[in-house]
Image (cartoon, rainbow, N blue to C red; front, side, top):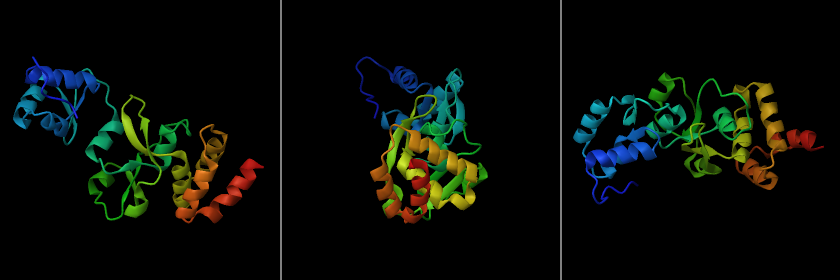
Length: 206
């Protein structure tokens, strides 16, 4: 949390500092947490010519939009997964055509559906398994499933994924220096994907 009680700084200077530290993106929730009223913040947004990227998310006029970070800021309870996780983890070269995220079962996602965001759902007790933090292309930290969880999720959703994309993801994972095969098998067992995963690994590791 940003410390608003900085000696010698007025409200505008605090917001200027926050804007600089956050690469031109400000969240209404963080501004209020820093002790600045929403009314004052809206005046600042107007004066600075900031763009409203989403509800509670504002971008400086000279900043580059980070749509990964904007999505996470707007929907902080979702986790980047599947094809989007592959890209963020460096296991896929091309950026996916649409964002893919996972949320807990029952999560209301009408607004995401309208934005062509693919939403998968998971039981709450398994939702946080494999969550890590990875930097977006613009450098903001994002909540993303790790490689092991992502491989298991792709297998679980294989009926909705192009076979060449699935095979490519498995090959990239096996080649990765950061792979953790024991953890992959643990996750596969938890997600009931162990029998599906084994034949792929036997071929790729032979």
